[in-house]
Length: 478
Image (tube, rainbow, N blue to C red):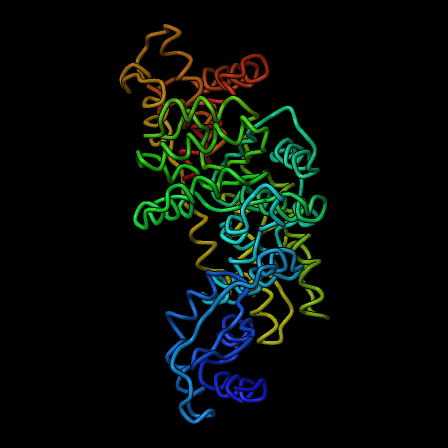
């Protein structure tokens, strides 16, 4: 078989499998030789070779036989001796993964995954390890340049920046936690992008806890645990997103624990994210909680109005290139920042929908258009938190009875939670002070005012009170 015949087959395959599958799976194949009816192809990684063998080999054989007159009996896929290193250094690998992910192309994502987040292996590591290093696709939008910094996330941003410099840091691991849509994943991706830029010599692996668990289970099933251990212990920077998903998975936790210890012992950097603090993750082993807390634990607080407004302005600047000439009315961004307060992803999605809708119908973005286009989002953000709901949450948090909170007892055990509940009622509901007082056993509005002021003072003096308020507010807004 000649290179020209393989070129003919490639064109036929492009028509059959489509451009996307062709680019991700067929195009990387390099025809090398044919021996006794066996056609040999070079592939960038074993992953791609195995995938093509499982999913496209029959189709490739059919077309090869049609152009060679049936002289082909089977296919062989192998990684050339320098294939792993060349692939690892391809500058477009990670961005290909991002484009595939943005397009929703599962096959493209799988192909790009095989060459994302893998730096060239050090000479001491086997070639197979460099080739098989797992990694999730990085989103090219999630960089430090596009991360809007405000008071709720400035510490997390500064810590992430320090780690991304690639030099030794005094805190290991870096543990980022916070609610949905507050920027944990954005910072994780930004660190990975920056490390790839600054320190291309490092083996940087970013993946979710679910992917870590999947790789572990797969290694158990295939009886390749030594390979699994060798792969994960060969990295220089390990980044695991949403670590709360391994809670309750005893075997996975065991392996994660040993991987964690092995990397720390080698002074390798670990970066972890979760939706809550380590000691609040239920069913996570105590020894893992202890390890996670031995580094720097940083909370990404819920966004405030100024930060949300900054995020919207940043997003609008990005949209101006995509939608040239599209005008947005005065006060629109302020309205959205005020009304959509719980989730940055929802906020950005609302603005994306708004620009797309206005572009399609050829209208300026006005308040009327906002009300029409985002009616469902605005309705969902109108969920009212009640005083009674706040009282129940506070009682659960402090482990007291509701009757004690509402009763006349002035013991500190009951008085402090009562004041906390009053403070939250004042700040999270539209109820007036007299109305709040009535719901706290018929107390006077001056009592409520005193309780609110007292908590304001204690927040500055007692870090525990501030932490309790933050936890309660999150639970109520969830």
